Length: 159
Length: 283
Image (cartoon, rainbow over all chains, first blue to last red; front, side):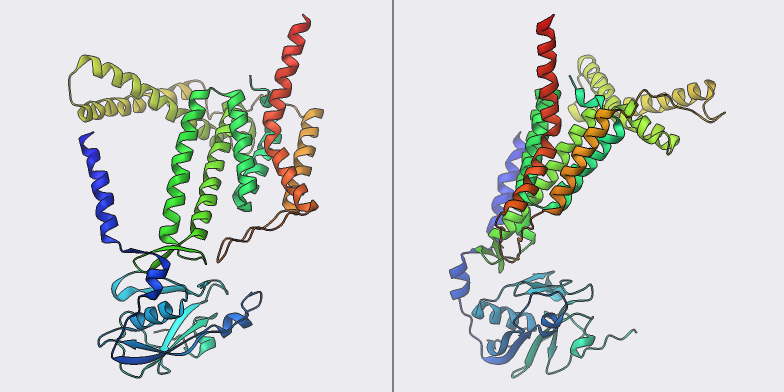
């Protein structure tokens, strides 16, 4: 029975390592940075997809977001979503962060080849969004694809 | 008393497939709760209350665990409760987790009912003609686990009396003894089967189960109820926001037919119990 004391200790440890905020607290906490980037989020492919209930293609259009030196695409994206109160879900950590869904639109909802991809200044980087460092004045576009990127101009090539 | 056993095993198997099919694929909390009530009431009438309480306690633990863990891994949903590490924890995820937990616990309870109805004899009747070897193996393995636990308990109790070893060491000792015993038993079983001529000729089975008029009635009633509840089903939406559809006359019919479908074993058992009492009172 003495060993059972580990359970509350473990729970307290887990709780202290998480930061728990209320919704207002989370959204009103704005972050400032010296550099700016432009973010747009678009799901026009999902609107066109047969059987999809999506009506609005533009989730975010040319939104200016501030970031600090050394921040990645994911950091800027997170700040933009926080400021505009857009829902998103990610998995993984470190360089391997993967965006599963934005604004209640998730991967695999429009066929088995669908999901979110991002482009910076028109190119599609082949690294995760938390491994790509931003430069001042970059244009980030988050696009929903229904066909592994072919329908948004990111041809998938076998190597 | 378990009078549901009097029906033909094939009809009973079809009935259980109907109930489990709707329970697994409907994902509808009203149907799941009605199914749970039906299973619990049937177990209450047929089996002992101790084992039922045990499985209900296990079910509640599973239900709570699934309800709490789902919001930690799914951040979909419009109603935000709070944020953990930049991830939203939503009401929708809690509700979805609760329904998922209900689904799992309901299936567990129905399998408990399934075990109460189907014994080895019925099992061999069902699968003996398709694959005699599979039926034999299945009935042997299903029998093996309870036997294993029983002999483990016996050996452990004896070990407790004759030695003062620590608990873990005692468990390990008993476990190795049980394993040895099980191996020995398997050799004895195969020897005795061999000496009685198993495998020398094609086996035939004798079983007393016939397809009677009441079996046909049971099959027709359950099939009609199943079709009604599948055709007039209601779809609940959980993500991104909870949408509970309004109930029309036809949807109510669908609900009612599934509720009747899940309560059939309980009602039948109750009816037979009353009839038994009535017949006894006449003597």
